[in-house]
Image 1 (cartoon, rainbow, N blue to C red):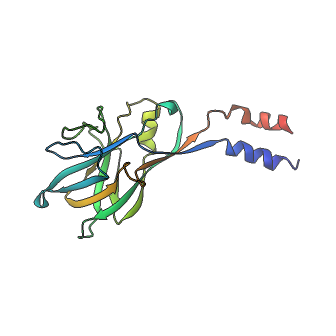
Image 2: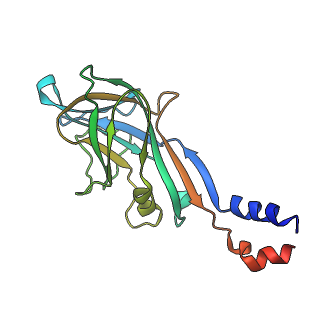
Image 3: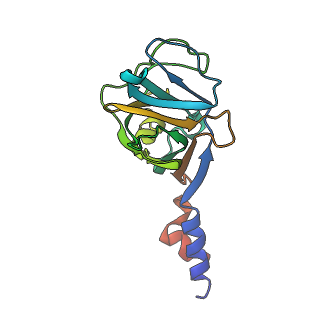
Length: 194
């Protein structure tokens, strides 16, 4: 009977798989268009009076090898290194992109869903963690194609600058996926090991 805690611990450890993924692509867009996929920063702003209307950031992770898996949690981590001196932060919404883009994109904004997948208020420098489980689950269950995520400013806010994948502190997707190999860990299976 002294082995029961060890067996239960092994069964629970097998429940989830933790991953930290770097993006395959990231960039930002401005209404006039331009290619910014190799820049070291991602921009978020919407303040026409300072010359920065509707600047959006987009990030793509290749999740094809995880198709069909169940998401226990998904968090987008973004490292902010500059915010405009007003100290007001930047209110954003994030959307699933609905069309293909890559780092050579030179048009204006990539197409996005009409409704946001979530929202996040960036306030202060450093790492920010954005909960995105339902969006990532939609990608993995193939409810929608994965063309990445687009952050758009909600309202009028000055600059927030984030580090891109071209730096050592680029965006990350922290995933906890349900283990697909749980079937042996039923109570009957555990009892058979005793």
